[in-house]
Length: 230
Image (cartoon, rainbow, N blue to C red; front, side, top):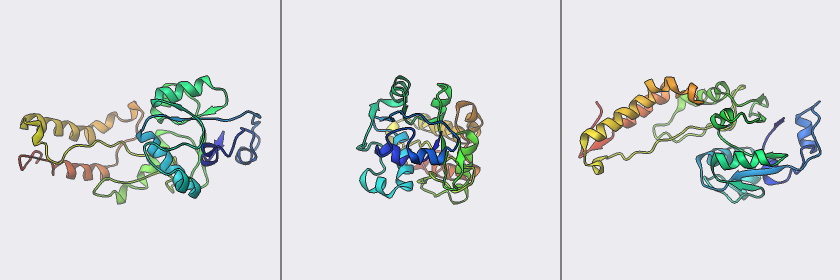
């Protein structure tokens, strides 16, 4: 099934054979079945990315619901975590929810094809997420704050984002300089050589341009006024 999501998660599109869905799925025999929306009950980065996308494709969503790790959903049932959403979807005929691709893939869950900003139908995959990432690589900001939802590339999946790791810029509170240095060295490995493991875990690799910005940030982290990475 192919669609864009705002009308469904607003509760405005109530049945799978709604005319708007039929228009996007010519030749598909859609059932006259109620749609049950399932969303997260807890705050999550997954919800932030999803509502960021919905806010970009729908001014009404942006003004009435917004973009956050937790929002007041207009309709639907709630599940805690990926597990809760997935379990509710599996137990509810005609339902739809959102979980991260790595989880959906490992759980063998069916997922819809999304119409992206270029008007193309795109399925979630490492390749389509990588295409969205690549649109931002050249302009990756120094502060790491960037949205890649609804990216403009023809083959970009529209609902994706980065996973963030937050650390203090001064690690003196750890009391142990060697431990602080070891932690930073591990993070440095994760962001560079460790990226070779990303695909097997169901994640796209961080572009070299973004890795360079991360390294710059890591080299600014201090312990009692001294930098830890040279």
